[in-house]
Each structure stands twice: as C-alpha cells, then as structure tokens.
Length: 59
Image 1 (cartoon, rainbow, N blue to C red):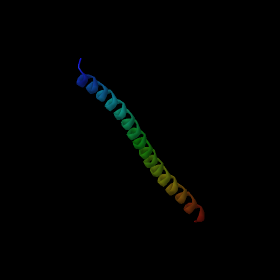
Image 2 (tube, rainbow, N blue to C red; image 1 turned 60 degrees about the vertical axis):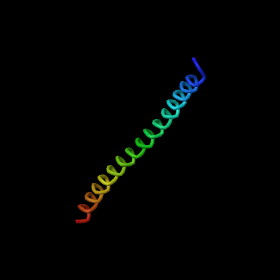
Image 3 (cartoon, rainbow, N blue to C red; image 1 turned 90 degrees about the vertical axis):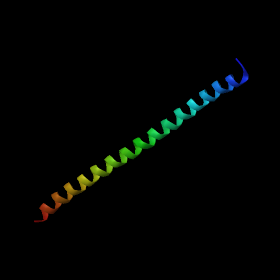
Image 4 (tube, one colour; image 1 turned 30 degrees about the horizontal axis):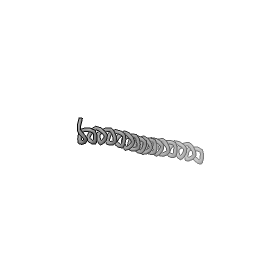
C-alpha cells in the first residue's frame, strides 16, 4: 500500500463523514419547512372555522 492509496482512503472517509452531516442538516431543514407548511394550513383552516362560527353568532 503506497502513500497515495492511504490518502485516497482517508479522503473517502472524510468525504463520507462530511456528507453524512450535510444530509442530516438538509433533512432537518426540510422537516422544519414541512412542519411550517402544515402549521400554516391548519391555522388557515382554524381561522376560517372560527370566522364562520362567530359570523353565525352575529346573525
């Protein structure tokens, strides 16, 4: 095993570790955005339900 092979193996290991962390961060950000979208949709539905309930109470 020569010196270049050792550096190549170390480079592959470092690349895998960095990629693992980057993918983990990416999935965390995507999960957060997905949660925000769900909360926004539920908030709009609840807003219109409450508006409808209170609008009927005035009539």
